[in-house]
Structures are given as C-alpha cells and as structure tokens.
Image 1 (cartoon, rainbow, N blue to C red):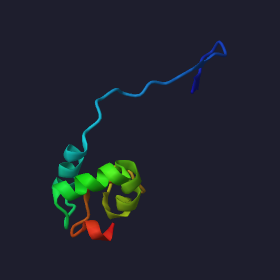
Image 2 (cartoon, rainbow, N blue to C red):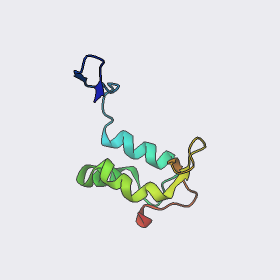
Image 3 (tube, rainbow, N blue to C red):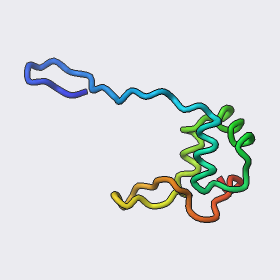
Length: 85
C-alpha cells in the first residue's frame, strides 16, 4: 500500500491481463529450452502442481538476467531437462 499525503492508504493496482492456459505455458517453457518432456505431460504437471510452485524448482535452471545480477529469467540454461527439476 502506498500512503497519500492526507494519511489515507491507497492500494496500488497491478496490470490486468488474462491468465495463460496450461497448454500455452507448457509450449512456452519447451520453446525456451526445457527438454525431456512433451507438451502434454508438462501441461498435466502444471495443472496438478501449479506454475508458481514448479517455478520455484526450475528457477536455478534459468539463465541469468542481463539487467540484474541476482535475477534469473527464461530461457533455461542449455541442457535443462524436466527430470532435473
């Protein structure tokens, strides 16, 4: 929350965008270098476990960000296999 000058708290809004479906997420991850899994299998894992929970496990396998030393971003490091995650 951000404070205004009159003492009332204001809620900051986040950008609104439609959520991606699991099949789109699976294809995006595979296109960004995640190997050892087909789109259908990955889609089922995303449905069962959740994108954000899995993201915590694949985070170390992401490439380094060019804008921030401690941040990792897609694509995956070369050779990353789903079984490693």
